[in-house]
Length: 138
Ligand SMILES: CCCCCCCCCC(=O)SCCNC(=O)CCNC(=O)[C@H](O)C(C)(C)COP(=O)(O)OP(=O)(O)OC[C@H]1O[C@@H](n2cnc3c(N)ncnc32)[C@H](O)[C@@H]1OP(=O)(O)O
Image (cartoon, rainbow, N blue to C red; front, side, top):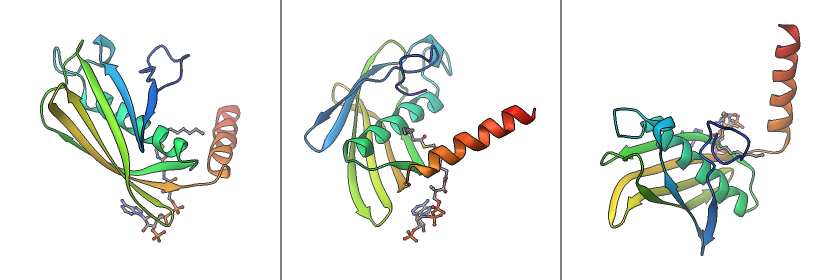
């Protein structure tokens, strides 16, 4: 949903490092419409969640979102280029506290905070096996 190239409904996010931060440019389009002309808040949360995923990946940590708090300060408009930026605020054991901004020029239209929890690879392989079992029992 966030970055993979194969999902036609995905955001195809491309992320780069900038010092300790990760940064992406993003344009929401008609696939992400909420109110006319405005990106759905869930779509904005999706790209921020994914950006945090890149941040952790760059740090060499596998982690998943435990909580994600969005603060929508102004409408995120379709067809407009936004700069997304994320950083690690603090690591506390398995918990990684992260923060992000969504900006157009000097206007911060949304900010976010999240808690990610480090997991091992088994978190994903077990979920995949359970999903496969559910599919085959249908
Ligand atoms: C391979 C490629 C991967 C690409 C991923 C990119 C995707 C983008 C990110 C996502 O969308 S991830 C998908 C959405 N998230 C999930 O599916 C996670 C679902 N939740 C879980 O699987 C479990 O809740 C989780 C593994 C996160 C934690 O369960 P655990 O039983 O291992 O841990 P626990 O509940 O004990 O919490 C761990 C720590 O976090 C703390 N904690 C929990 N909720 C918190 C909260 N809301 N705020 C602050 N701290 C919190 C908790 O107190 C504890 O602190 P301590 O370690 O100090 O004891």
